[in-house]
Structure formats: structure tokens, C-alpha cells
Length: 238
Ligand code: IPE
Ligand code: IPE
Ligand code: MG
Image 1 (cartoon, rainbow, N blue to C red):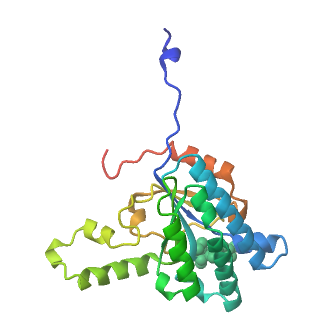
Image 2 (tube, helix red, strand yellow):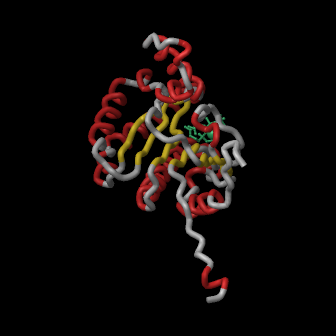
Image 3 (cartoon, helix red, strand yellow):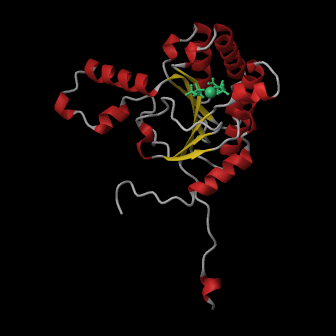
């Protein structure tokens, strides 16, 4: 048998956990002379497409950045628009149960309107038994806020200072019990984390793209995953 016949076909490996910064909705709308709200609607539609696609290909964890602790700086009208899109999504969230997607919200949920908090509770409860994709939606999320909150919890639990390890901190984050993201994707041509998963991202691989989020389809995701497959992750080793 020749060398070439023996050589195994390259098999694609899926990251266990992909995190996406869903950025570029506003510029997508501007390019089309549409209001920013149209960009957020298109972005929300694309979020559903990508979540379903990730579930279909058997991804274990997907975490998406929907609204940051800094996004409150935007005009009230835009914030209200984003929250209304979220309301519509949540009222529809049983669709995700039917698709076997388990949804969890990470972030400071207590600051959100009561009706949204109730809808979030319902969505999490209704999808709790789903065995497919684990979908985290980062909402009113900030990495520094998350770490500050973890410190407060640790102090409140009176954990002796010399017993506090990296695991203690991880277990007090919103993502407790979940693996860290392996691969962080940011479309829209920005090269920053914007306070996203700053603790969990310590050893993630990154992928940046100029495509704006509403246009970032399954093909773009596949291109990113293909690139991930050519990375050499050493975690400080050799
Ligand atoms: C991301 O798109 C959505 C949120 C931050 C809520 P943007 O609204 O930031 O879009 P750009 O960056 O202005 O194009
Ligand atoms: C990050 O995008 C937050 C979300 C996508 C939800 P931003 O548009 O808020 O980030 P900056 O302001 O460009 O860093
Ligand atoms: Mg942006």
C-alpha cells in the first residue's frame, strides 16, 4: 500500500465551546440607509440561524454577546428597541425547546425589567431538559461586572482567603460548571473583546472578520472553524 493510501483523511474537529460577539448591526443598517433598529432585527434573525446551525452540527456550547453592561450608554430609543426584540425572541423561545436547544442567560439579569426577567425564567425552565446545544445568551453582561460579582459572592460565603483558587473564582462566574470558550469569533472588523468573557477567554483562540453580524452566515462560521482546525494550542506547554 502506498504512503498516500495510508494517510488518513483530515477530520474536522469542532471546538467544544464557541463564543461570538454579535457586532456590526448598526453599520449593516447604515450601509442600507435603514434605521439602526433594522440592523438589530436582522442581527436577531441571524442569531437564530446561527444557533440552529450550531445545534445541527453538534456543537456543545455556544455563547453569544447580545447586550453589554456598557450598551446602556446608547440612546434610550435604541436600548428600548433591543429590549423589545429580546421580548419577541423570548416569547418565541419554546421554539428552541422544540429544537432541543437549552438556553441560559448570563449577565446581571436583576437590573432588567420584571417582564423580561419572567420571560427569561420561563425560557430557561422550559428548555432545561433539552439535550442538544447549550446556548448562553450574554445579556447586560460585562466581564468585569461578572468578576466583581464573583468576588462579592466569595466574600459573602466567608470562604477562607487561603482556600480561594482559580476554580473558586470560575465556580462563582455566571458560566460556572461550563468549559471555557475554545474559540471566540468577532465579526464587524473590530479587534477587541469589549469586556466579553475576560476571565474565561484566557486561552481561547480568536477569529476576526470584516463581515457584519447580520451577514455572518453558516459559511462564514465554517470558514472560521476550518481555521480553528489549523491552530496549535499549547496552553503554555511545548
Ligand atoms: C451589535 O451591533 C449589537 C449590540 C451591541 C447590541 P452594534 O449596534 O454595536 O453595531 P455597530 O457596531 O454600531 O455597527
Ligand atoms: C459589543 O459590541 C457588545 C455586543 C455585541 C453586545 P459593542 O458595539 O458594544 O462594542 P464596542 O463599543 O465597539 O467596543
Ligand atoms: Mg458595535
